[in-house]
Length: 280
Ligand SMILES: NC(=O)NCCC[C@H](N)C(=O)O
Image (cartoon, rainbow, N blue to C red):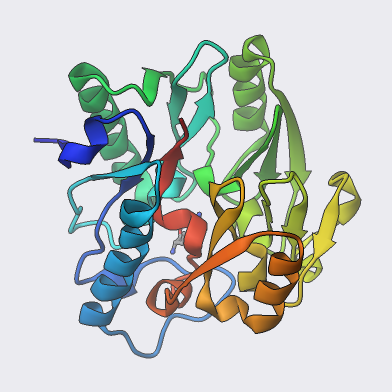
C-alpha cells in the first residue's frame, strides 16, 4: 500500500500530503546550519502530529498520510518531493521533483509512486501527474507560487535546466516562471513565502535582491518568513516567529495559527516543508 486515505481525504477539499518522521530524523542533511547537538524523537513526533492536526481541524482541509521511509531521515520534508499547481480546468497538476540532494533521491521515487497510486484511486484534488523533462534537479522548497507567477530559487538544489523545464511545462497553463538566484538559504521558501493577499514576507538577510518581488514585506527573523496559507484570512506559522510578527499579520487582517516545530527547525526545516498542499 503506497498511500492510504483517511476517510476525509475523499471529500472535495484541499488536500495536504504528509509523512511522519522516522526515529533517525536527526541524521537529516544540514547545509547552512550545524548538525543538531541533541534530538528528541517523541517530541518530534508530537510536534508533527500537532502540525497535521492544524489541517485536520481547519475547515476545507483533509490530510493524506504517506508511509514513513525509515532509510531516509529527511523523508517527512515532503514539500521537496513534489509540487502542486492549480490547473485552469480544475484540480491540481502535481509534479514529482527530481530532487537536488542525492541522499534524498529515493524519497522522490517513493513520492512519485504514491502520486500514481493516488491518481489511480481518484481524488478531486489531483488532476494529473506530470514529470519534468530535464536532467537537472529541483526541490519543491524552491518553488513559490503567487497567482500565475511561479518563483523558483536557483540554489544548490535547483538548477537552471530544471527551472527551464518547469517553465516549458507550466507556460501552456498560463503560469510564468521566474528564476531567483539564491546563495544564502537552502531553499527559496527558507527566505520568502506569500501571504494570501499576494504580499511576499521575507527575511532580507537571506536574499540577494528582494526587488524581484513586487510587494515585499521584510520580517525580523527567518521563521517569520514562513507562512502556510490555510485560507484567505488564516496562516499557519512556527511559534518561533514570535509575537511581533503575529501582531503585524493580525493588523493586516490575518489570523495566525502557531505550531512549535523546533525539532524540524534544527534540521533546516520550516512549516512549509512538512506538507505538499493540493489546493481546492
Ligand atoms: N522545503 C524545505 O525547506 N525543506 C527542508 C529540508 C531540510 C532537509 N534537512 C534538507 O536539507 O533537505
